Image (cartoon, rainbow, N blue to C red; front, top):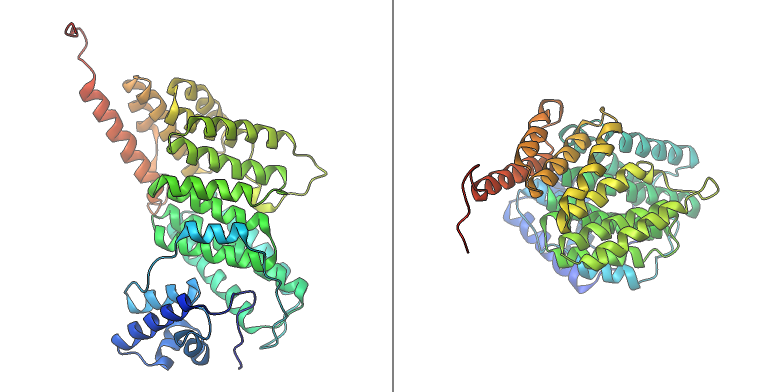
Length: 397
């Protein structure tokens, strides 16, 4: 089978050539032949030869499979800020028809699209530990089709949209599981697929998802820049998509202690959400965004910037109507309610809310939830140590 350049990917650059050298060095250091590496990674031997010699780009999925097979990190992590800047300024590539391998038609594309929707909704109730391997397998299969099959331009755009959506979902679930480098690679590879599909809104969704992760566990200034770029780079996004991008901008700004940007973004979220209508098509991946979710994000920003007590009614109302089958989200929102009480000085209420969280109903693979519980518990304990005992008089200053 002849392997051609993966559709829509840029030609090799000195950076990708250098990465190919690193891939070859790591393979040889581990004692694997090129044929053996092909068997381990499920890429063809000719294709890996082209990657290792710099004649084809070392895409994130290739690097990740080398790292997984060899058990070592390879090269340097992609710079998300630089790649966001390139996405913001660049023109989306126009996919060309591939002529290698079997031809695929609309029925297979429709099956893949339906499967993405099914997996996305499973994330509401199925834990990361169970779901992540399933999504990764489906993403690998879709990427294999993109490399080896032939299809029309219209089908190609739909196929790369599927790949971009699967990459976003896989990145989101990997991030929930605490696998942050994997999530970043998935998000950035998804941006490439979304650009190939000409789907600017999906590219912005992937970048804002990455910004959300970096806001929580990385450099907050970088997160704010990426979140702002995602909003700027999708000026024609539908109302719900724009509301989602602005929500993540508000959160990044709140964590960066940028009060003015946070307030403007939250106001813009409300404006965008009010513009939705039955006559405006929305991508399926924004199905979950509603008034309740918007109130929860506003409450989180209030907890970060103050006044924290103002977050309590928003979170209480949201939890009162939230689908209890979505156990992870319910628990996460309970941690925010507990934090609002703790920051407002009501430690007993904070402990009571935290004690209500039933982690036995939630996949232990959700590092995000367990990190939140531990963080709020530490906040309560620190606050308790600072709080004077009842009846103790403060010394005169």
